[in-house]
Amino acid sequence: MTEDPAARPAGIVKGLDDVGRETDKTQSLPPIHLWNPPFHGKIDMRIKADGTWLYLGTPIGRKRMVRLFSTVLRRDGDDYFLVTPVEKVGIAVDDAPFVAVELSVHGRGEAQSLTFRTNVDDTVTADSSNPIHVEIAERSQEPRPYVHVRRNLHALINRPVFYELVDLSVEETVRGTPYLGVWSAKTFFPIAPADSLQEV
Image (cartoon, rainbow, N blue to C red; front, top):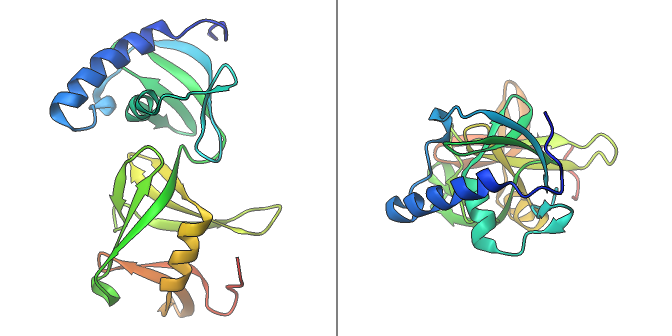
């Protein structure tokens, strides 16, 4: 079932109003993993690779609305949905749904912690539950670095922040191979083999 793309997602907006009020009270994310509302098809909403949210092809300009949408975003398998207690709709995501736009570094060496802020103002510290991983783009062969944010949702680490990670990188041996990578929360995250990391 696919909704008329020109139709306003009224149920989601109504559900967001309710979720937003509760989120404002508790300052915590809603328990969307516990919700199982009926599926109402796909709507014409898309998250671009740069983190811009579009509805009917137009950027959503209200930052608070984007933030609210992001709190009810869920990934099931390879598909993304907005979920409220009353409705579930599918949306398109070009790459990762979030972008890591800022890095805070605390401590040094193995005791170092790396905390990322996303474009929707989530913060996450890289650790064994929220790992950093790097993929290689097929066409450009450039590294595509990501950090896990929550419940199967990731943030693409933008280029300036990735440069910061490269500057912080140290060499460690992983399964017999020397890698350049970074430490955070006593976990080492490889970026690339030490003999293959080139200027990005």
